[in-house]
Length: 303
Length: 298
Figure 1: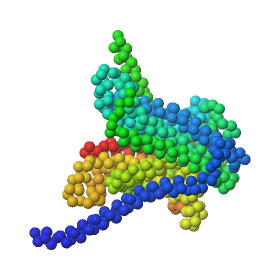
Figure 2 (figure 1 turned 90 degrees about the vertical axis):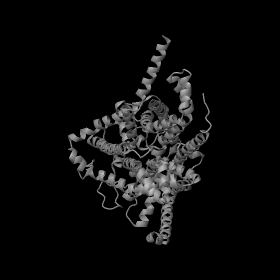
Figure 3 (figure 1 turned 90 degrees about the horizontal axis):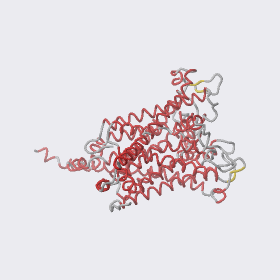
Figure 4 (figure 1 turned 120 degrees about the vertical axis):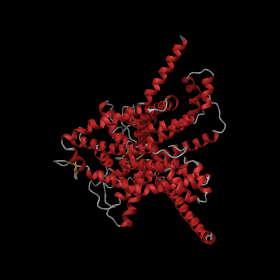
C-alpha cells in the first residue's frame, strides 16, 4: 500500500518519458514517409530541371540523326506506344478472364490455391528472366523474330499478374446483392456476370489496365532481347518489325557509344518524356480510383 | 430442350474461364521449361558445382571460365544492403500511413509511395548514374561512383514501395478490438504499436520484406547501369560489382547464338529465377501458415 502511494511522482515521471518516447518514434516514422516523398520529388526535379530545355516540337516529332547525337525521339515514342498498347490487348482480356474465374466461379480449394500460387510467382519473376523467356519462346522457337509482336507478348505476360490483381479487387467490390437480385430474376450465372457484375466492375478494372499499361511502357529488360533495337531509319509498318523504345533509348544513350556526354541533354529529355508518360498515366489512375471510391456510397446500377 | 442448351452454354463458358485462369500457371511452366532447355546444355561443359561456385567469370576468354559465384555474391550483397535500408524505411512509412497520418496527409503519402513504385527502373538507374554516382565519387573520394553502395541505394527505393504497400495492408487488417484493448489498459499509442500491432501483423510484415527483397534481387536495369559491372568478389561496400541480372542483360546481345556463353547466360537466368522462386515460396508459406490473429487475413 505504502509503495503504491509513494509511486505517483515516479509514474508521472515515467509517463513523461513514455510520451517523449512516443514523440521521438513518431517523429522517425514521419521522417521515413518524408524521405520517400523526397526521393520521388528529387528524381522528378532533376529530370525536369535538366530535361525541359531539350524538349520542343522537333524533339518530339523528328527522327534521330547523326548517329543519334541530334534530332528527336519520334520512333521511340511510337515504339513504346505500340508495345504497351499491343501488350494490353493481349494481357487485359486474359487477366480479366482469370479474375472472373477466380472471383465468380471458383470455390476455395486446392485448384484455386494452385492458380493463386502461380499468379504470385509469375508476379515475382524478374523482368530479365521474362526477357530470356521471350527470346527463347517468341523470337527463336515461334520464329517471330525481334519484333513488336514478340515484345508485346513478353510484356503482356509480365503485366498479367497486375491486371489479375486489379480485376479481382474490382469484382470483389461489386456487392453480392447485385448478383442475388439478378439470379433471383432468373438470369443464368453468365448473364449475371455479363449484364450486372462486369458493367459495375469495369471502371476500376480499366484503372488496373492503365496501371499495367504504364508498367509496360517503362519496362526495359523484357524488351531488350525481344523487341527493341538501337536504331531504325523508318517508323514500324507492321507488328513484325523491331522498334526503338523510350526506356531502351535512355539506356543506349546513357551507356553505349562514344558521345555519352554530348547526348546528355537528349538523355534527360527522353527520361523526362518517359516519366511524364508513366507518372501521368498513374496519376490519372489514382485520381480516377479515388473518385470511384467516393461514389461507392451511392450504388448506381450500371446496365 | 431449351433448358439443356442453356445449361450447356453455361457449362462451356465456365470451362473457358477455367482454362483462362490456368494461363498464369502455363506461362510459369513454359518459363521453367525454356530456361532449362536453353540453359542446361552448359552443364555438359561445366559441372553444376563449378558453375555455381567457380570464382571466375570470363565467358569470352579462350578457354572460357563460367563460374557465376562472384555474380551470385554480388546479387546477394546488393539485395542485403538494399534490404538494410528498405526494410526500416518501408515498414516505418507503412506504420506512419496506417497509424499516425491524418486522413489528409494519408492521401498525400499513399499516392507518393505508389508513384515511387511506378517510376521505370531505367529512369532510376539513369538518375543513379548521372546524379548519385558523381556525388558519391566526390563525397567519399572513391575511384568510381558506380558501385555496390550506389546500386543498393537505388534498389532500396525500388523495394520500399513493395514493402510499404504490403505492410500497410497487414497493419490495417489488425482488428481494432486489439488496439482498443491495449489503449484502454493505459498503453500509449507507441506502446500499442510495438507490443500489439506489430506482433499481430508480423506474418504480413515478413511477407512484405521477403517480396521486397525478391524484387531487389531480380531488378535488372538499376544494377546494369549503376553497379559498376566488375565480375569480381566485392571487397568493400564501394566495390564495383556485377549482379546476375546485369550480367545477363549486358552480355546476351553479344553472346553467339546457342554457344557456350549463350547457354551459360540462360543457366544464370535459371539460377536467378530459382532464387526468386525460393523467396516467393517462403513468402507464400509464411502468409498461409501464420495467418494473422482474429479476422485479419492477408
